[in-house]
Structure formats: C-alpha cells, structure tokens
Length: 347
Ligand SMILES: [Zn+2]
Ligand SMILES: [Zn+2]
Image (tube, rainbow, N blue to C red; front, side):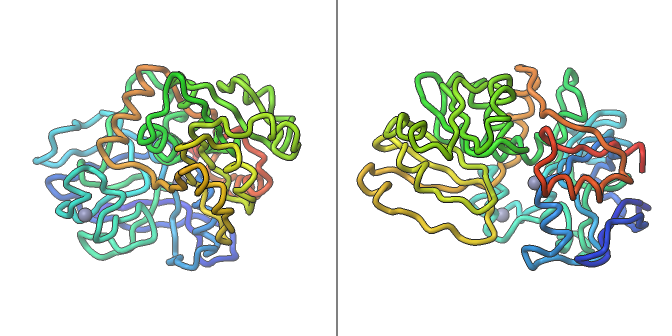
C-alpha cells in the first residue's frame, strides 16, 4: 500500500482535520504524484457537508491537483520521475464505452470514477482527493503540465478551467461572437479569461459593481449590472452565447431574453433547487438551453497546452492546509479572488 496523509471530513458537521490513510499499490500503468498544490472547489464544500446527499466519510476532498511524479510504473509512457503532472475531477472510467473511446470520459456510460468519495475501480476502496500528500493514478487520467506556468495557478484549471473551456469550444465561441458570462467566481473568472482569449466580445454580468474593475482587467469588454433592468434591456436579443456559472439560486429568464436567434445558453453551475425556465424565450428564438460537465482527457490536455501557449492561469490565493476550514467559510461569502489553492508543503 501507499501511505498517504491529508485533511479529511469525518462527518458533515465537524471541521476538516488531519487524517492518515493508504492508497493502492501502483499498477504498471500508474504514476504516484507527490501533490504540490490543490485548488479548493465549491463542490469540495458541498461534498464535505453532504449537501448533495452522496457523501462518504471519512472524506478527503480536492480535485484540482498539481504535483510531481515520484514513481512511474513499468508501462508508463507519458511521464517519468520528476515530471509535473495534474489530475482533475475524474481518475478512471470504463475505457470501453462509446464516450470513453472518443475521449469524453466525463460522460462515461458506466459512470466516471470521481477523484474522491466513490469506489476505486481497481480495488474498491473509497477514492480520496487532493487535500493530501500524494495520489496514485493511471497515467491515462493524468495530464502533463506546461513548464512555463505558475503551478499554484494551474491547479484550478483542472476543474474551473476545463468546465468553462469545454462549452466555449463546443459552441465555437470566437471572433465576431458576443458572449455573456454570468457569475464572477472561480468558474466565471476562467470563462471570462478564455472567452476573451478566443477573441469574442465579452460581457460580464454582475450583481455588484465592486467587481467591475476586476472584470475589465480579466478580459471583459463590458460589464453589466444584472439588477438594473435598463442596462439589461440595452442588450436584448444580442448574445450569441451566454455561459451561466452561477450556482446560487437565480432567475435564468432575464439572461435568456438577451439571446439572439439560434443562440445558446449553457449552464455549468449546479443549483440546489432546479430553476424554473421561461420556455418562451427559447421557443421564439430557436435558442438552445444546454449544460456541460468538465471535459474529457484529450480536451483537458488541450486546455492545459492552450494555457501554456497563451500564459493563462487562475487568479489564486494560496493558503496553508491548516486554514482550509476558514477558507470554506470565506468561500460561502464569496470572499476569494478567485480560487483558494492549498500549498501542500504546509500539510
Ligand atoms: Zn470542482
Ligand atoms: Zn466509459
């Protein structure tokens, strides 16, 4: 077994604390990664507190993982010891279904293996996430990391980055397209950076004008106060694409009214209460309402390589492991610009 230590939730209400556990012995196709940084995704908080009802305890959260390869199995071809490697939201899938074989493992028809809190396909033990010293993973589910990027800023690309990159690519956002981004948090700030980098005209929607300067710095061409009906009306029927990253309860209707004919609105935030949708806004525009789930292995690597070429990383606040419970509380108040990343050397 591979000894590991981390921070775990023991139940839904007590703070995370130090925890020792074991990972599987590495298989020939596995690498062992010494974790250097792990991002703090809002889903870690939802999961640790069992807000989605599928928690398994003890739980080590964390699925935005960057580290260094300390061991590469005999069948490993993509990595050698000393290389940097990254892991995101999934660490395995069936590898044989129609989705896995085209590199869309996140939609695996038999279910992806999440990075934490589900049975490992290899040995059945519960997967433990990246708030920990190391990870054992098949190289197929690990990514190479561009050498020029700041590693702490890379970590959030593995969830917040790919979750926004994938729908922007799928819906062919680029020059000549007007794109709206709803929400300016961990996901939203990456959606803004990518949409701007792809050459679109980007409008950031916000409920607080205090974020305006930041939104402009991150790549917005315009910032619209979504609570001001006049500002919203000025953009009616004008958007090719709207990326909604907000997970707090909110109305979709004031945004869908801004779509052009044949435009699309894509949801990537996961609200606790299903939204009510004004269908009229879609019918009379032949507009699409869609969702999107992270990205597959090839697209995640493509995204990391793109970030390397265009020098894109997440804006992060690096914290020591011991501050994770405080970080969770600040996350609830949206008091972070724009992602907490744990420096795992402090574990
Ligand atoms: Zn996440
Ligand atoms: Zn599959």
